[in-house]
Length: 303
Image 1 (cartoon, helix red, strand yellow):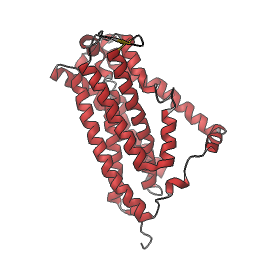
Image 2 (cartoon, helix red, strand yellow):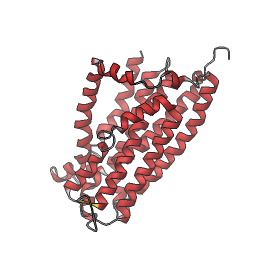
Image 3 (tube, rainbow, N blue to C red):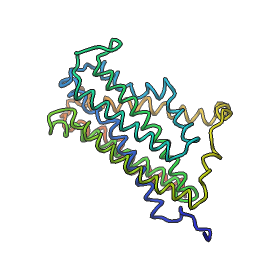
Image 4 (cartoon, rainbow, N blue to C red):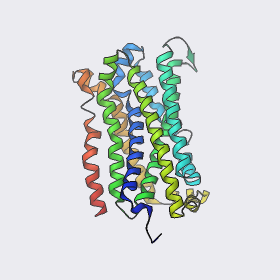
């Protein structure tokens, strides 16, 4: 092969980044699509704030309490990018469909499951399944970038992947209310979300073709086996102080920023009297700033 690596093809390298970033963009859009709709949900679906909070908390039902995200990471190490990424993308689609079906076809107050309104609970279960998929796909996307950009523009590529993906959050916060009002129902943004996720799944399936070419050309088909999970890895991580510092950093960020975004639009309306059509634009500035500043810092790290 004259020492030529498929990674040396800039077009293919950056195409893979575009694909996984696009799929993550769709995932983040779905993750936050209901955040600006809290007041409309309470009006149209008769949910109260407690039920909306219960639904929003579904993000961690399976990932945290059942350790599904950890299992997703183990699966990624053992089964590789293509299988794990495809499975997680399918989980995103399934979860989004369940959530959409519950909100569009069930009626609040008709029945209870475990003392919880069935519409709220089933929508939450769908959201929880989606969240297993989106978080597992997130670590898969990071592994894709490392695989294709190791020794190249790695930090910049990671930064761009995050920046592009966060456009999904920005679009969800700024566009959900206008779309819902244009169609007169809160289910309209959810139907858009399902369609965009299907597009993301199709894009990733195309990536799988490129990834197979990569493994064949680089003779790296056994790369995942070399990095396969071992129980001793848990002991190694538990004894690594830097690992726990990074976990604490992620904990503080996730516990502050993401819950704020779930209520930020409603806060703008209720506390500051901002027009509902414009209120989502204000919190959308947070992920919007990521689009510009993250690649800059990534370039600094590379250099």
